[in-house]
Length: 352
Length: 220
Image (tube, rainbow over all chains, first blue to last red; front, side, top):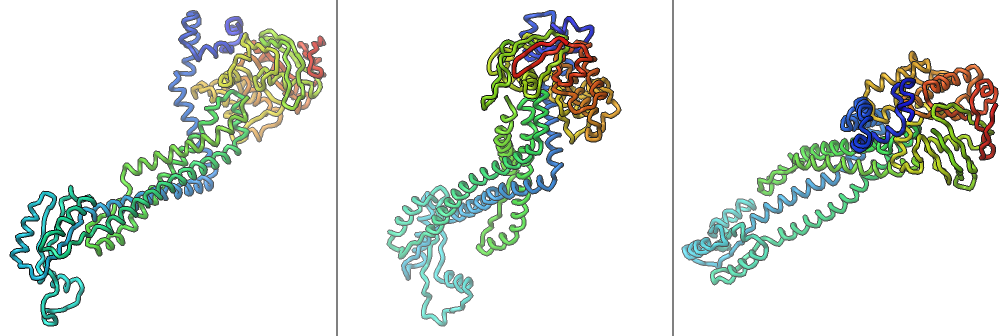
């Protein structure tokens, strides 16, 4: 063996066999205890494998950052494209969340209006209201007298009818029934409605739910459309990162070739590219968060003004910390996948 | 150290670069590999460095049969074999120091150890004062010396050189050869492919002659 015979002449020259045993020090140490001291020396110069791994990764990260900085404009544009691709599904999610939030609020506020027959005595109507309110599926019943109804109509419409122009108040008394939240499902509301309608003193019962149902269906549809679109954009992000990495690797052909000649593993060559993909994905996601947050901040005031018109105390939701985390994580993973796909094929052409 | 037995290499497309080559080199030996262009010199060196696989036959390097080295272990094998090319294959986006450091970075050495070894290697080829220059600013001979420093920085047991003096004038060639001799004196097995007959004649080493893919040993 060269290592033992020529040691005096050639300090530190490690033959191939020792390099091979280093990968499995436990086994070789057991096989030849005499060699263990030399092995420790080798190990100490190379430190332990965890430190070595950290060193590899630090090297990959710094070389990746160097590569990104060496083409600042291209890197920035890629980042911008990724940010837009990621901001679209994130923005849609925010809109959907708001729509669900809003429809949920509207669903809770479902109510049944019972228009009583004309000339139902007020005392009787109030008695009915009281009995109805005792039902377990009804939270509360309001009695609106014909006079109140007329006053409210005049107030809301701005038209002053005045009793003078009419012989008598044309409006019936109304019982507004608020169901319990637990009974607010569409089917239960329908059942309640038909029960109330069959009461003798009720002329007509009206459930303001149909449009809520339609809104639910619409939001559901929008949600599914958003999911499909998100899938496309996920593929787009992978392709964008993949293409960027492919172009970048073309600029480093020589470096990859020489590295492989002097003994770089596939993983060593791949690592900086994976970091580049991860950084692009993460950067794109952060930028996308900025876009979405900025847009929702910008829209907040007009939105609040709008909801005020609907007499709702609805407050808009935007990206939560968890959403931001998920978006960043998704961006990072997609970046790595894109880079891995692009560089996998590429490295093989340099291998035996 | 190097042991070829009936090694054949046929490239895709049918060209047969080596037609059953057998030879052996002792450990610590230095030899020249001669032959015309296309005789198979580069192919032979590539087989030793595991840049190519033989079509048939066995190659044993330092008691390891190369056929047993799997794809994912090739990188580690290459770290133990230094290769110098006709063109120095340097990276011009980094300094001389970083070029020489590449094999050590790839092997995961500590930065302090890298610095020590790179400076030692550059000292041996006489370029320590140029360590922070860009290789572009170096002459052809100096660039080739950087290539040699890179080949020896990981202290390989085998040093291969493919026409290392091909682009250099006789005086520079002489210097390069002296460098190889110096590494041979400290125990490295050196195999140099060259067609610089004048130089080979002056240096008295074993000469392996390849002719049309077959080996014929010549004693000069």
